[in-house]
Image 1 (cartoon, each protein chain N blue to C red):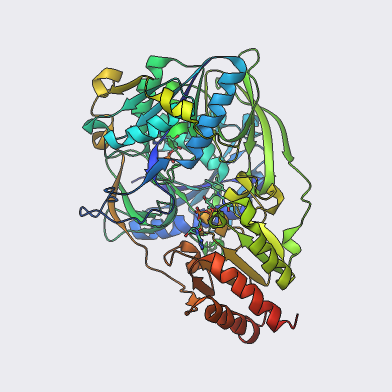
Image 2 (tube, rainbow over the protein chains, first blue to last red; image 1 turned 45 degrees about the vertical axis):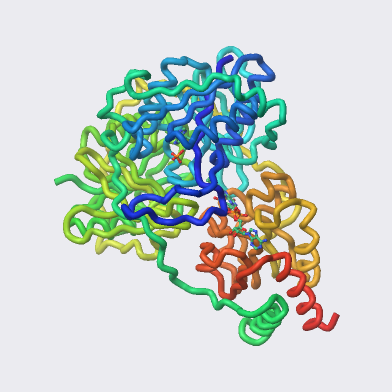
Length: 263
Length: 329
Ligand SMILES: Cc1cc2nc3c(=O)[nH]c(=O)nc-3n(C[C@H](O)[C@H](O)[C@H](O)COP(=O)(O)OP(=O)(O)OC[C@H]3O[C@@H](n4cnc5c(N)ncnc54)[C@H](O)[C@@H]3O)c2cc1C
Ligand SMILES: Nc1ncnc2c1ncn2[C@@H]1O[C@H](COP(=O)(O)O)[C@@H](O)[C@H]1O
């Protein structure tokens, strides 16, 4: 079974974000990065399925040169090889134009299953995987919390619904699943994995290589334009209790007793 | 001129509360652009829901009624709305940003080759092109977004972006019209086997008076002791954000948020929790909210009443000591 897992490189969780001089993007210089959280879980899920039924996991990433770091991590975790959609023509897009580029690469691979994260921690569209499915003409299911072994060309998965509800569904392969974080504990890359990753294939591809019209991808293909990126103004501001730990704790207890009357 | 559609999500034949928020957002957009607002209800057995929606200030309520739309699966939903949009050509189609919307509306956007601005928290139309505000980077930044080009425009609103109570009532009930779509040729590829609640929640946090909730800032399971001691001193229940449960540091029945429990205790302490919207929806109605976080810009401080900025490993033990002192223990 061939499984493509889409991974995106994003700023590390606690990274300090600075707005770039264009006022529309984050200045990535010196910002530590990681593989998007739900994509790490997607990768873990893909590796588990491949280990169970046999087959390989191909990591697919659209991003600049610096994203090679995320690809290397995916290879170290166990992906067999990687495709890096890396071209100026892919940059500056939205979920729709990213999905068009990813779809072109997936068509060339014709896998049985594509896994994505449910949402990127930077853009946060929560769209790309589902658009990808529609572009491929495949069925999709989102917020997946469990995957069973495929049987008779169908796959059985558990979807997360709101407020603690879940759902078991089946869908025919090939299909796209978007993975919710927490599905399975994510493995660490072993030293052997890290060493082995250096020998694995990382194919850099541009629009022409995957056979997609340059007008469909990147900034040229976007349907949504980011006008301005800024730090939100705080609305209801909390009363911040100052001082060292003991002083702040004492003021808090005092407020909770006298003002809020909850102690 | 095309209309604005507010697409109503129903549950057991009733409009979900968030659907009124979509109407409220739609009324704001309609007023700004001078376009008519219509509601669209789709499902099976949704006549009652359509009537409820018709009481709100909308030009008309369109109803797509088809047995293939129950239970919900993405293929027939996508097909139904694509056909309706192609027939009536609305300019904007609005949705609540629910899990169900995440599951099928991106498909609809691709099927229509339309732009989709998802998870919107506000909108403005300073004469002309409307701007939709989103919160990328886990709510740490704001982004003003606009559509490029023509064609239908899809928007989903974050829960709480608009208030259901603000969805104005109409003077008279709006007309209800059937929106005919032919789904006979649509293949339903997804088969729903079972919908269920995982575990009977062992702890019903919704009854707790005091909740001490811990987030990823705790670092690792072995560190939980400090918050457990605080919870004990306060006589409160321990709860968590999603990553704490994803990492199996605490069981899933302790999770607060859109996929966990919704709580409103008298006192809620958020410790090492950033305050992502999926967490906030589960606790923002708490009486008094205290946030302890090392990042002064963490979104949690915007819903908190009191905050302490600093390292939880210093502050929490100090707080536990003060609480014990105050309670005479
Ligand atoms: C569909 C969907 C459903 C979701 N459902 C839920 C849900 O039900 N519940 C939920 O909680 N989340 C849910 N999430 C995840 C949510 O988006 C956030 O990722 C999550 O809430 C973040 O948890 P956190 O605040 O603990 O972690 P982080 O966002 O990583 O924040 C950790 C915080 O700890 C602070 N910190 C770190 N170290 C220290 C220290 N030593 N002292 C003090 N502060 C420190 C940091 O400054 C940071 O603010 C869902 C997401 C999606 C997309
Ligand atoms: N540039 C990208 N490269 C690879 N995968 C991506 C990219 N952008 C989005 N994805 C995938 O699509 C998912 C949803 O992203 P989004 O629609 O931005 O929330 C992510 O979790 C990734 O799995």
